[in-house]
Length: 464
Image (tube, rainbow, N blue to C red; front, side):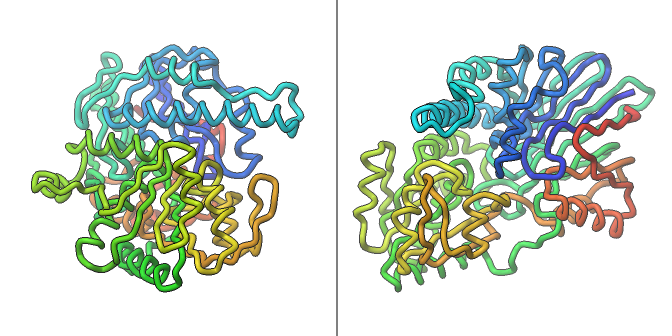
């Protein structure tokens, strides 16, 4: 018998952590940070419910911090096993985990410097040294490659279409007369993405752990690239600067590709484009390195000599001096900077500088977790608290949901329609409560499947 326990991504969209005990082996699928509101972030400081040293291996669906960002702490608390993922996921984690550790150290430094922590001294959740140590435990594989955990457990990573290297984690158990399979969706990508392939169709699934980020929403019918062109043109007409808080990995590269395509089609003027994120700069190099993981169109363009991620007037801003210099730009331009939910990073300085001017535009191109600054701006609040002070919001606030890296509930349902038989049980995770409940309802009504929305710490016995 196999046991599955849910230690994260329940009742929310972060902290993905699922414990699978089978055939004498203990696996953790994903090891993510809780993000968003303060009460969620505080959960990262709680001891992991089981001893990390008792877990044999970690299987990562992809590199985003809500799926990988707890790993340095996990290693610090005793996990010494191997972390399995795709090659691109390992490359991206090398960037993301080091950066996350740097931010943890920086937060602790400023908490001590300014005295706004009740802890004396304030300590980081983990350090750069912890991140470097855990990165030595990674072992990467190709999509579709057989990974044998033991004599009865086989793992495959299959393209999930959500992020470079993102995977469905396909685990087959062969202890009985007939092999049985559990599939972890990770995050499912939106079909037809600019750079990535569509998610792979799954078959012969006995148990399914399914994300529900967009479980109660549909993407807008308007093509996102056409919407981007409209926002850029209107920003130019007002004579302002367009500021785009964008995730450094995935969304930033999609924007570069879309802007270049629009320029070449003559749908927008050539504008200075400032890529103001060292992490996004490094991630872009990985996208260029892992061209084999991109879709056919982008590979054909590359063979034709097109630099697919290079708008005509691209300015790379790696240093703080280069970033500060952007403040002097008073003519139409585009600033792409992290973080995507405006929770920290260089984007905060650009918001302080640009929010008070009605000529400027702030454009969100991804999901905003409730409680984040991005969510606050989309709610239409007249002020935004940044660095302890309130900034007046006069800039135009725009949102394009179609750039989301997540499939909506209709796209998820279409993927489920391709299953050759119903899973015995489908577990809905990684969504706000209303999103998870809505997707569970859609699946029951459309397919008649048995669906469970688990709570934190809930354990299920599986016939594997």
